[in-house]
Amino acid sequence: MEHRITVRGEYITLGQALKEAAIIPSGGAAKPFLQEYPVFINGTADNRRGRKLYPEDHVVIEDVGELHIVAE
Image (cartoon, rainbow, N blue to C red):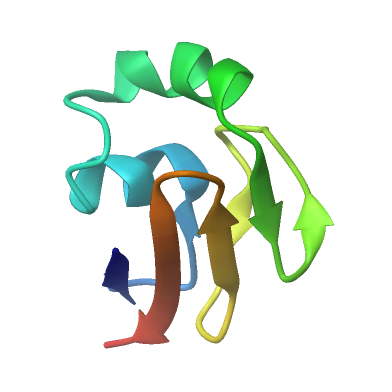
């Protein structure tokens, strides 16, 4: 499943993007989710919920889907 996440400022955090894509129900669910599922940002593994995502970033979550970060 692919999601387009629109950045309304300079960036959005990984945890916020997961919530906005309805992959997790709340921000508090980000940490356990990221411990369970491998996440790759622009091809590099990263599981920090506070990781800043900028327009043009591409996030792949194994067994879940992809997030495309776009500018507003």
